[in-house]
Length: 73
Image (cartoon, rainbow, N blue to C red; front, side, top):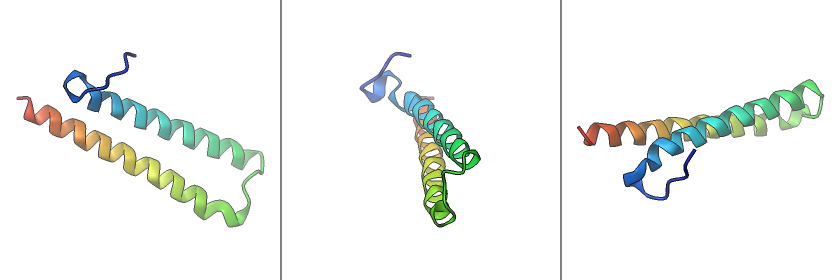
């Protein structure tokens, strides 16, 4: 994947891929830690907040990309 620095060259599309990949990696890491018993009960809220933040970042990136695509038509 080519890394874009400007909005004109596909930056927002790239950000969707980055955020989606980050979300997958976060979910996999949390699942692995849960399976290994490395997450304590009092940490569950923190990990839930991390997952929620990743979901929000993906939704925002998708929205920005969709708006960009709508503006190009």
